[in-house]
Length: 313
Image 1 (cartoon, rainbow, N blue to C red):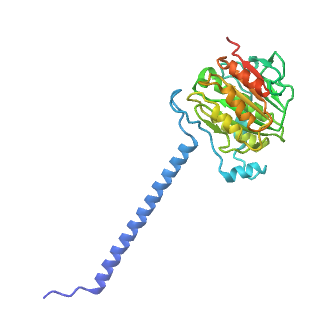
Image 2 (image 1 turned 90 degrees about the vertical axis):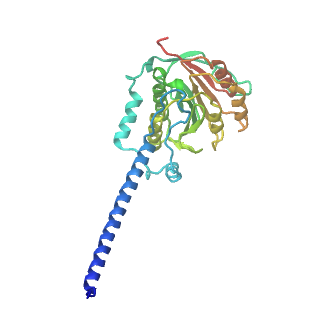
Image 3 (image 1 turned 90 degrees about the horizontal axis):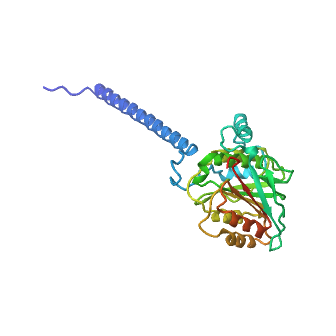
């Protein structure tokens, strides 16, 4: 005769199975959460520190950090709620502003050969022809590679194509750009547009930055981290510059290369579309290949053209 199962033993076995299953489920949830956390941290690291390209044609994307709308709104308001830099970050910014020991181009020795003249459309160029030290200026509202402009809103359109990797040119550009922005008076507004095959605005959108502490440090951090690569097509950068509201009071435009088309009439068309002409100061850097176009762009807008040469040549 088979004895009936003891109900007490059945309940105990059932509870044991349920307990084991519950522990297994909890363990599985913990492992899943840890795996997802590790993936999120890895994705954040890759986003913050993207790998640099391996060659001039490795890709034309310009790697810069982009502000979220809420962060940019706080910056635009000029408040201190958003300050993405620590004291050590600021020390690095100050160091790169003054240090040239790692660059093959001796900064204080670079000279610019300046030319300018009255614009055929009514702008007033400098009319000066002189050599000027890149290291300093005479107190204008904005100074970049020795060229000065007065006003309130300044745009820097700068070349970060693959050729800027050569001979320390990108480092020189970064230093000059940071020095120029640091020298802006607090009442000024600014933006930077990097270009190669494409264009990328420093803030990621078409808004002005204030020339004050936290926003200057933000700009310096992005400028120091920008990479170079790709070809040379400045037209999208000019389109972005002339879409800013209010319009710029002056534009600084530099390149170390040549363009596959005539940029001067396109720059003039965009400039005229905004009413009164905005002076465009143009800079050929080391290479003179685009000198004719740059000089025409400056003359048509009432700006000044300069060539910056390597003193070793």
